[in-house]
Image (cartoon, rainbow, N blue to C red):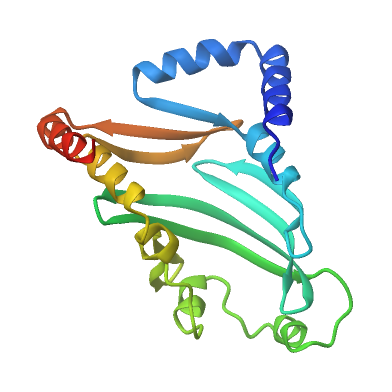
Amino acid sequence: MFRPRAMLQAAVGYVRKNPDEVVRAAVNATGLRFGVPLATLRWFAGQINGKKAPKDVEIASVPPALRFAATVDAMGTAVRASAAIKIDEVTIAEDSVRIGVRLRDVKLELAGDSDSPVATLIKSGALDLSKPGNLVKFVPKKPAAIVEAEGDRIVLDLMKMPKLANDPRVRKLLGIVSPVLGIRAIETDRDHLYVKLRATPTGLLEAASKLRDAI
C-alpha cells in the first residue's frame, strides 16, 4: 500500500537532494517530454509488499531500455528473474491501449535449492530465453491482456482486461484524450525514464465533442 504522506516525504526529500530536477522537468515539458527519475521507480518497487510480491527488486538503465531484476515465486519455486525491457509501441484509441514490449537478455536462475518441476526445467536449459514471446505464446490460459507474442516481443492491450474494459469512466477518458494526445516514445538515459508525448491539434474538435457528451 502506498501511503500519500510517505510519497510526499520521499518526493520532497528527492527534490532537496536534486534541485536541478525542477529545471530539468520544466525544460522537458516545453517539448512534451516528461521524465521519471529511476530513483522514483526504485522507491515504488520498495513499497510493494505481500506474500507473493517480487522481492529484492533492482531497476537499472541500459539505454534505451530498463533492466529489471527480482526474485519471484514461480509455482512455489523462488526464481531470480531479470530482463532488459524496451517499450517500442504505445497506441491509444477509444477502445484499446496497446503496449509493445521487447524483452532481451532474459535470465532465470534458481534462488535456492529445489527439485520442483520449474527448477528442473530451468536446470535443463531447455527454455529458449532469447525468444520469450514464443514461450508466452504457448502458455495455456494466458492473461487476456496479452494479444500478441512472437520472438522477443509481447504486445499487451490493457483494454482487454475486464476491469478496465467494463469501466465506462476509462472509456470516456480514452475517448477524450486519444484524439489529441499520444505517446511517441518511451526511453531511458542514465538516471531517468522518459515519456515523449505527441500532440494532435486536429483532434481538438473530436475531443471537445467527446467531452461534451461525457458531461
